[in-house]
Length: 113
Image 1: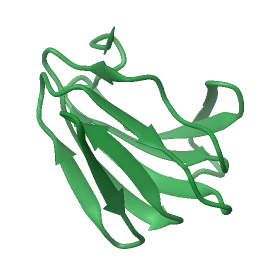
Image 2: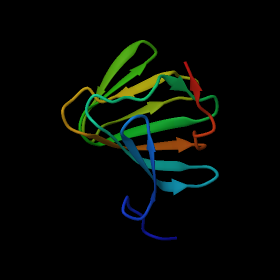
Image 3: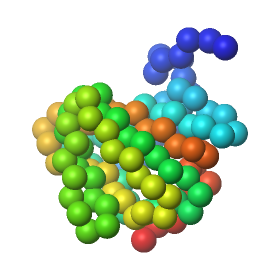
Image 4: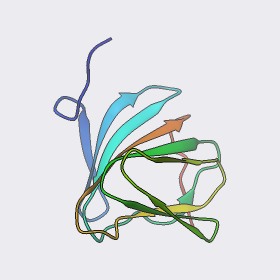
């Protein structure tokens, strides 16, 4: 066991300008800190096996799920059950920084819609 942070965690980029850091990367659990710059978003998708929890550290997230819009602010979170199509967006001026936990890990369980 060891202490982790974005300074030492495995880093990756996705989309056009988004960053992620694997804080926990195990067979049964993924915990990632991500940063989405202003105006950026992920593609709408769902997971057949994974459920996720998004927790906002900084900024304001706009989550589309099942034709509903959820605004999630700092120190708030949202649970995404498996099979629910969703899309996270940053419609605000500042970076959106959040933690996303997935069980089981969702990287090989992503279906674009």
